[in-house]
Each structure stands twice: as C-alpha cells, then as structure tokens.
Length: 467
Image 1 (cartoon, helix red, strand yellow):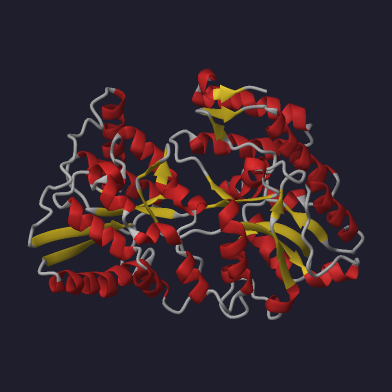
Image 2: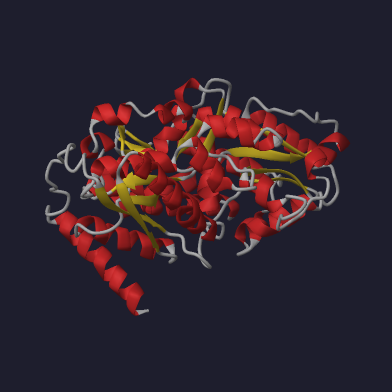
C-alpha cells in the first residue's frame, strides 16, 4: 500500500508541475550526443515481470532481446550493457511510475506504454517526437516503417508526429455463428454493407427459440468493452471520431445515430439487456456464443484466439474453425464511414518510446529499432499466432490462421485508435452511461442529451462539440 500511495503522490506531483507550467520544458536534444560512445548502458522499462504480469514479454526482453542486441553491438565494436526494469503492477501505478521517471531524468531509455497514454504524455512534455530525440533523417531511414500500415503507425503518433513504434495491435469485427445463420437461410460468407443489413440478420435470427440474435456490448458493467467494441466502431461508421478538431463529440447527429442503433437492438429485443448489466455479462455472452445461443457479437480478434480457441480458450468451441464466421463492421451506409470508408474498425495496442533524457539517444534508437525488427517480433510471439505491427511478420506467422490473416490484411488498413488524451476515460464513462440509458428505456435523443450534459461537466464547455 505504501508503494501505491507513493506512486499516486508522484503522479499528483507531476500533474501539479504540468499545471504550473514547469513540466515539459526540456532542453533541445543534441542528436549527436554520445553517438560514437563505445561503452553504453541502456535500460528497457515495461510493465512485465518474470513470474507475474506479462511474463512472456519479460522473458523475451531478458532471454532474447538483451543477448541478441548486445552481440549485434559488440560486432560493431560497441560494448553495450542492457538492463531490464520490469515493473509488474496495475496499469495506473505503472503509468504514475514512468511519468515520474520521465520528469526526474531517470527511468528507462526505451519505455513501453499503453498507446492511450501517448497524447497525455506528449502534451505534458514527458515524451518528445522521435525526430527531436534522434534526428529526422535517422528516423525516416528506418526500413521498418514500410512494414507497418499507416493506420497502425497512428498508435505511436500524436498530432502527426511520430513518438514511438507500435508494439502490436488488434482489430474489431462482427463474429457470427454459421450454424445458426444456416438455420435461417443466411450465408456462410455473410458480409453486411450497412447497419440495416445487420439488424435484418438479427431479425431473422430472432425466430430461433432460445437464441439471442446479437450481443452489442452496452452499459457501465462492461466498462471499456462497451466503448471500444460497440460505440466507437459505430461512431466511425457515421463518419465521425470521438475527438475531432480538439473537441469531443457531444449530442451530435452522429452520436444520436449510434444511440439510435443501440435502441433498435435493445428496444427491438435483438439483444439481451440483462447480459449488458451483469458484472460478468461479457464473459457470459462468450459462453452462450460457444453453446450456439448467440448469433452475432462485436468483438476483437481476442475472441477468436483466446476465448473460443478449441485448445486453450476460456469458452472452447471444438468446431470453431467451421462454425465461427467473421465480417468487417460496415459503415452506417456505404461510404458513410470515416474518410468515406465502407467498413470501419477500432484497434488497441501499446507503443515503445524513447526517454527524451536518455544519455545515449543514438544507441537507444538502435535498440528501439532492433526490438521492432522482424526477427525480434517473431521471437516475441514464440509459438503463438497473434497479429503484430509488421506486415511481413503477419504474412509469415498468420498463414495458417484465416481469421487473424483477415484482420491483418482487411481490417488494420481501415482501423482507428482511441485518442490518447487525459480526458478520454471520462468521455468513455459518459458514453457507457448513455448506452445504459438506452437499455433502461430512454430514447436516443434523451440519452444523447444526458450524455452531453455529463460530458460538459467532465471536460468543460469549450471542449465539447454540441449537437
């Protein structure tokens, strides 16, 4: 408890510094600083520890990255010592720890953070663009950028500047039960092109006794899953993102369209409102899907590789490979999605950044590049099939998994990411409550109005785009 309290106080101190204008006034980096050093010590920091949280990441860094990078540098005549700073605490404590490290000239040289924190750290000056730390020519010259789709690079960027390199990512799709679809005459290769086609399929499934036509995450009990799996992909399908031009979407026509879709689902008995209100409702929806009791659900590829996997899933489906289908999430209407897209998605992911106070920017950049090379990325995966940030690695390791290949090839090029801004958690909570209001019987207009009022109170009038 003492450690938690110390980290919390540290975070509060950092916040206070930012508010008083003392944070982020770092000296311009000399990109040539120690570039020719022959004896170098670097530290990698991640929220991963052997025998605990994210153990595989910790083992990869200590057992593969460090010895391989050390050898590579030795062949170049550089004596590098790489230390690993594994933390293994909850995300809030980890965030507070690295925020303090960045602002007290200590901490790792290469630091892994949740992509959702990047904008907040960038605005506070704790992290700086790679161009500033290393030099634009050095950054642009890395051949790895060509293997990372532009949409995925966005998780490591803020205000059109690269701050780091994405570690990995995922994508949201609509999973559907082919066996249930066949019973109502829907095709095994179903791909809706509008929201109306989704609800039409749900209406067809409604005739099956004991089957929930579709499960769209909603309410506050499902927390971020409501926002990330439901609200934000749908919002992208209206052509809007939750934060545009520096303001959050209030009761705009796009937000109302999303809430209207929720109303069609839950007001039309196409989804189970009780699942959305139960503490373990999302897990229960997984189990029901595996038992052929849910026709469709909006989820990330996590559902395929970790939930219904026949061998290691938490809700194993022996016939997963033949019974589970997947489709891209359509825009509300063809062409109505962000950037005029027909299909949309949302992705998450973490990012590795450089500490702007590193004593060895050139060598730290070489380590960061090395950790995101094709060889290192494959080593990180081990025997598991998972979508990475690199297209060349995905082509190699996902060849035998049609679902993950689909996400890598079809979904990642059209995806979006949550805005990495400090106010985002408040906005997400307000969106979750708006969907809960729909389940409770309020109209889309009423839910949108209440959402906007809560949003204004949470982030301020000037930060809200009103409807």
